Image (tube, rainbow, N blue to C red):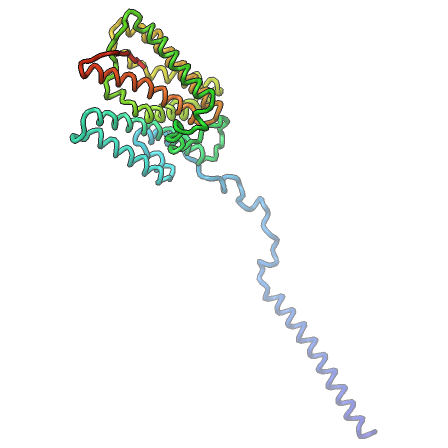
Length: 328
């Protein structure tokens, strides 16, 4: 027992020293880690005031609507390049170049040249509407209260042939009413004549031109001017102003008339045209679409152009069985 006592004491001493040494090592390691810890972890997170989270930091880019429309009026498609919509820009530029080139081609006859020139002009009118429509969409309709039409070119091309559009009473009823009103106006314009020469040549009244004319004029007057005026005034104020602009655009028709007939045209024909513009504007506002006004406008012009074209062809062959004057 005495011999084993030193061994036991030595063992206990060794264990106590080993245990104490470990505690010193752990504390030393902890202190060392604390000393080596980066100061960034000891700092508090930055406050919201210190971060630049103002609305302007995340605000989307804004495009100028007048610049987009102005560029499109200058060259169809240029406004869409500004809006970074290169596909639409390509369509407008290509269409303008195609119809513009055909309108000056020496290979084609004069009637076909004139038809392509008129089509090119109406592509330009559509381009103005499309630029205004798309710049508003680009700006997420911020700052606008008037809900403008969003019809695409394909929508307007097919509108005169869609039963869902034509079956509406305001469309087919408006067509019949417009023809009746036009016939009455024509009687007052030339009451003393049972036969009168057509004022428009076959170049300007080829029946199929009614469709690009309907698309172009409705796109510009009801698709662009009416929403723009409505933003400045009220929806009804926009309808009235765009209708007056529509009538004013037809003032030039009277320049080719005799003084007496010109006076009748300005006093009777022009108010009728303006009233048509008012009705087209109401159709657009009611349906929030250009399809109804395009369909009505196109078929109305088609009926007038067809009669006028037939009258011109009849006179051309020396058998004027009938004749008609269409100043609008």
